[in-house]
Length: 135
Image 1 (tube, rainbow, N blue to C red):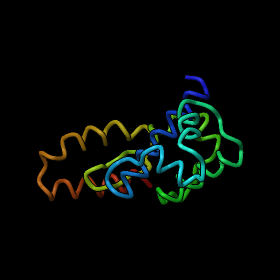
Image 2 (image 1 turned 90 degrees about the vertical axis):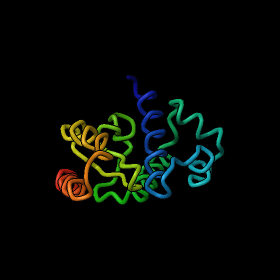
Image 3 (image 1 turned 30 degrees about the vertical axis):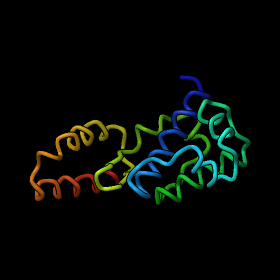
Image 4 (image 1 turned 120 degrees about the vertical axis):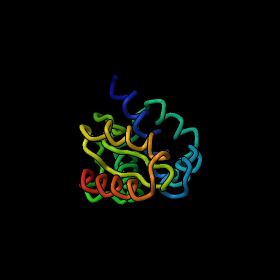
């Protein structure tokens, strides 16, 4: 995947993540554009892989980091070169987004797929495990 595709994919994922954390469903392109003081058309360009100015890229990093309450903020290099989805798990049922190590993500996703079949005590134990793995 080239840098432009990776950037667009990361912005789409993070737009979804901050919306789920804030209200339980993804933010629209227009909502993110409003937060960034740009047009929806600009957001469409960014999500399709057009690289924003350094100032706007830094602004995206700051916005996503603040909205996700990240102790270690995202950097422009993260957005351009990493597959951000590998570092986060979205728990939509709880309006939560957790930063996790990529090697733990698949296990956690498999657990949450089956979470509806778990009794509440087991689910609480799993959530404690998620907290430990996300540190």
